[in-house]
Length: 240
Image 1 (cartoon, helix red, strand yellow):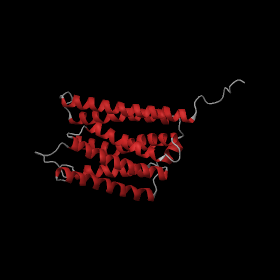
Image 2: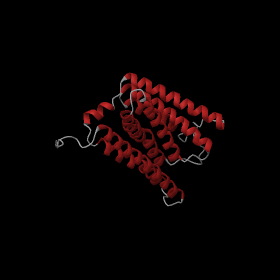
Image 3: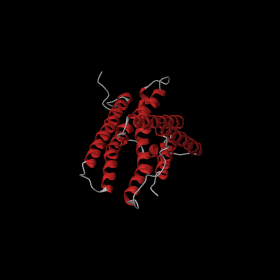
């Protein structure tokens, strides 16, 4: 019997595995490019603070965006918009997640350094507002949306599709682990203790947002929680 010429050439499982490889490669490239840009900035090759901020952001955003585009390029726009939905229960849960994670981070900071880490830095003279605004837009808007689409919207979803119903919870755990590890590698923590704090806080954030997405099949709550978590830190540490 001849094979059906109109049959799909890949099974759903094969497609999910391929998408996982694409996303993981995109994350790895983002980490490598971010470290390279950080090294170049420290060498003085990027004297403008605005250029430094944009270069650091784009080093992460471009690979992640390309990876997401490759995976979702054939998805229906309506389905994508539906997954980004946000209901009142999602919003309430998102606020709770942000409060818990920000409180955890402050608690760890007090434990390790004696301060919450949510105080403005000491500055000599008025701060340069332009790079601060550029960085704030990236941290509070672009990064939460893009990272949640990458990690919870694609990575966690594809992992779940490869697991059985009984082991599907591992998709949330594994995604949260990769999410936290990626932040540690990109942030380049100045000490092991600081790296541990970043890992724990972002792991719990990824875990709670992952559970929220798994329960609702929507990304809106996760995006809002991530946005609030980042925004609180930006507002609290804004130079005055």
